[in-house]
Image (tube, rainbow, N blue to C red):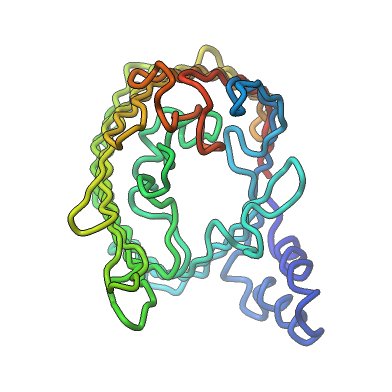
Length: 372
């Protein structure tokens, strides 16, 4: 990993078109740490992931699709992180992370440079960390360890299971305050996101929390996520609530994972829609450089006209080095309700598409990623 000068180059190239030379010089001084850089560190890091995918039932006419994707196993991204020791077990830190599409070079989120993380915080060795900015939610941090596919776009049903974003817990929140504390094997996480609406403190606000116990060969976790929509003309807002219970167990080299997540959405005060996700899987290193992952997801959708669907996934990863890997993944999704074609929506494999155009869908992906 390259420090100081690499981070400075990234900052300058991103800002030079919009800032005067004096501001660029200031950015260079900040990135290299200025006169006090000897006690801190700044690191550039990232991963680039690309794959070719075959997808069945990818159009309204039932046609198949072959395409190149960005981020099959890992979302392609680069970031800059740094820290400064303050003494007494205290430190200050920051993270700036940007997602991009490796297949065409565009930003993952248009007009947003650091769309994945933009946070600054203080940490104490005993009392934990308090941070501010665009940050991952507590539910995301906790479920990432328990999803067998670790939120891989090809293929998982986290974090955007279903055809409506109302059922998906947010991976990140803007305007958030986040606390992370650790005691022995227990990690506690809490976050709150300000809605920023002058007419209502609750409008567009979100909060969540969770506990994750790591017992070495086993672990258990619970998480909760709550968010309000923007206030409407009648002075009301939608509500989304998600909670999860998950566990893992290692039996030698074999790791077993699974859990349950429940979604509840209130589009109005008197109406509610719910959805549940059961997930289970296993990871096993066949040999030093080869790892197999199997996963199963069952989507229980109580939304009228939407299908219940299960998905099975088999993925293999071969490490060419510590930083470069090849992978192949196969997934199959099958509707168990409205499988006769009467459903208005079918859940697709993965999270790249909003819907499948048939009661079943197959996805096959071949790709590679490189960390830097």
